[in-house]
Amino acid sequence: MMIALKAATPQLPRTTAVADHVVAVDETDSTNALAAQMIGDGSLTLPDHQDGELAVAVVAADRQTAGRGRNGHKWVSQPGRCSTMSYAVRIPRAIATDESVNGWLQMIAGLVTLDALNGMIEEYGAAPNQPDCLLELKWPNDVFCHGLKLGGLLSELVIPPSSGTGTDADADDDVVIVFGVGLNLALGACWLPTPQSTSLQLHVTGLPPFGEMRDAVAECQVEGFRERLAKFIADPKGQAESLREEVKAVCWARGRQVEAHFTDGTTLTGEAIGLNEDASLILRTQDGTDHTVRTADVGVL
Image (cartoon, rainbow, N blue to C red):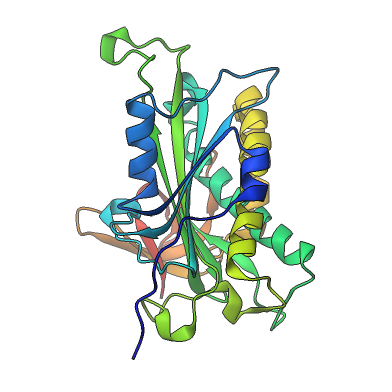
């Protein structure tokens, strides 16, 4: 029999030392929803860019009662076992709404997450149990390990009160992107929500206790979002090409036969070739035709 775990307010001393603002609660419906609500009512503010330095705020909870994934999916987590964090960053509206580059924001979140997990593993001298237990990204928003889902990401745009909307909006205004990151860090095999999911502790030995691990990963993510997004804002097109090459090395689906499931119920089957310049997925069907996939759930056959 599994015992229900009690939520406790996350203790994040390392994250607090590097973030501009940290909100930690024991339980909420969704850290993304809480971040958006606080940004909207003005209780969570982010200062203007200073000399290219971006402000990053963190909203953390030990338990989410209504965690959300992409395309309306639910994110199931366990307190004291799963990290549920949202990172809020101000970026120019012109970049956030430019469809030729804004797809890379989600890819940046994925790379930041891989950097943070790998950095924490290295810091504590931990090591994978098997040589093929690499951390990869499943386009567009999942963290994979050994072909199983270890985490998920959800990016959402929030308009702060100081910005205009509709015809009042100024292209030079800033908006806030909230990056929700859910990670199974210390989840035992009996707690896994689906047969397709996994947890970091099942693949890596020598990890620190969960609370310490969560804080170390979040600290790295704050610094990673700040650095990577500042570079992207300074040169979106140039960074897009660099990111395309970087993602290629960690793209789990590339070279595999996959099936894309679209929101209208249709599917498309083919080989995942790579990413386009706008971060959309290239899927090559059996007849040799390349298709562009921008919004879909992608699974390997």
